[in-house]
Length: 378
Ligand SMILES: *Cc1c(COP(=O)(O)O)cnc(C)c1O
Image (cartoon, rainbow, N blue to C red):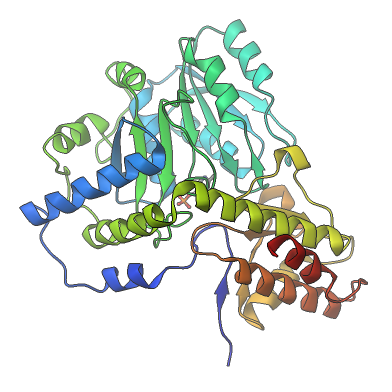
């Protein structure tokens, strides 16, 4: 018997109320019944985004909502600022380039957060910059960026602040309105405890001004069309009905626990994971001031093959964690502590990590990681 555990930074495990909702008979979407469901989802999303702005729901993964931001805000040839401190920061550059939007790129060492002062310098020296594309939690490195500080800088500038909060929503504090985030992008399969398939995007009045001038091509992801429908509590195309019904179940669970309690739980699990890694003699990729409470990236010692480690944990013992991406492939592992991942899941992941590290010949005191994690969780 192999029991499976999922501790990847998306997808994350599903609570029973979500899987039960997904199994219900389908209903039609142009009905008062579905409109009530959509309204409830809209209200719940506003709670978790901390915003009064409209939030649009697309049937796509998170990247679809990222593309929607670029397609709706800009015109070919315009200039934006992107920040490359990991794979998802790079994705902003790639999407912009696909739309012939020119990118001024801030290169950040993978494992570090961007310095908000550098953003200030760039937008001051280049008044052509129309938008700044940022990542709250850079999932590929386990780093959290200071969006609050960036928001203070961008707020009174000509530019729009766009935030990828795909792995942060419901795992880390996100104050869309207070931090002056003009567009926030999220997805369903991380902190929201749903399967992949929904992309979300919030839009501020400042962002609408730019959208109205944008000439980028768009059809499915046209926010103007989506807004006309949303004003009638409707969607332009067939929505992912079952996922939206399940979303309301997840949002109910989130309201019951309370966002603040969820953040504290993630923080505690993150600290337990970090202390366990240190106790095993392993280094963390993110410096301690930049470490995200949604996912922890751990460096592997010389001679330990990260891909083999992840594969053995998953295929032999059923414990799925993530490896490194891009330049970090094979060199790090990533353990998620978000969504429906609980403290005993973390204990299981560390136990399994110890077991496989031991088999791969790494020398340490068996149980040291679990003991360190237990101390934090006590
Ligand atoms: C997971 C993730 C994405 C990609 O989302 P998909 O749903 O796979 O398209 C983008 N950005 C961040 C920060 C993520 O964690």
